[in-house]
Image 1 (tube, helix red, strand yellow):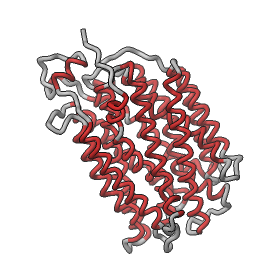
Image 2 (cartoon, rainbow, N blue to C red; image 1 turned 60 degrees about the vertical axis):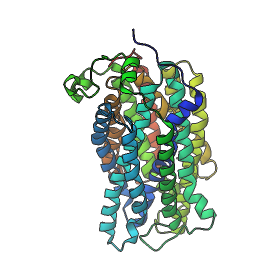
Image 3 (cartoon, rainbow, N blue to C red; image 1 turned 45 degrees about the vertical axis):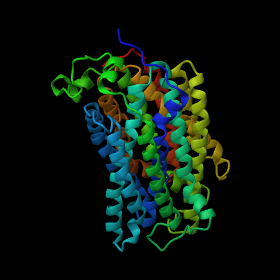
Length: 441
């Protein structure tokens, strides 16, 4: 009989996920400012979604490889931690380069190409650094505490988001310029990326010091694996296609919900700056001071979303039924997105984004709780890497179609936020298809 992993203290669970705080600062800076950066450099609004295709495309390729490789990695640095260190190192370098895409004296097209490639590496490295934390919870936390562990992860994730989203607004308030020559990114945004890189380094060091991964023998014992088998025995490991064919039904049903959720979030990241600038500030001129003010305010709104998400993340474990709170969260988020069409006051938008934060909290915690509860530990990393495809694939589809859908909706970017709301409502309906199952390899 497989022994049950012992309960862990709150602070042990905290340490397992604390590095998520720094990773999420980087992710927040990316999601809130990438469209603003490219629009400032000179990208056409109808082309903005296309800049988001390559990052998730790389993620859908890299993440399963990272997951499978970490399943086979056992060395003095750990099993998952080496990939955290590598991903964070790349992210730090790119964060220092990306906001300067328009400042290297390149032509507009060359600057956008540079930014496009930098974004690809940034998104890939952030996901490489983020994935180990999800795997560590699956590796080391028992089923009873996983809900709490992923909620702590969600809390730290949103706390990091709060810092990243507010950084340009805060630096502007402190006197750093929020305007720049045509085609260049304002210093307030650039310095925010530098700050995020520094915090990421500190969080990775903290994780490396305080996280103790299970030795191979202990891992095999708590996951019911063959004690005599070598953890690196390739001949006993099924390939990714085989694992997909034998994946538990939860993998596919939760993945369907993920499709609609992440397509919605892609449209939020892509079009919120243009939507708020047009709907509230009354401008579509990306070189105007009003547009940059709107860009800063989008960071504030995303921070409000993070606060709503943190609060809702605390409430999620209080629901005994995962499916009920999952569907409810997505409905609230859908209402929040749709309401942006009717709100022209910058402060009333707080309500809209608090509701969106409820959906975000559920998206960060519940899919992984539902999935890891249906898996044993043998191929945990590979499955979580493959499951990342349910995050990347919908973003690829949404990005590819965004430029076609926008003119069909009248060219108003706020209409894309309404579409995001509709997608979340469809995702809520799909939650009813999920069937929770017991552990499988």
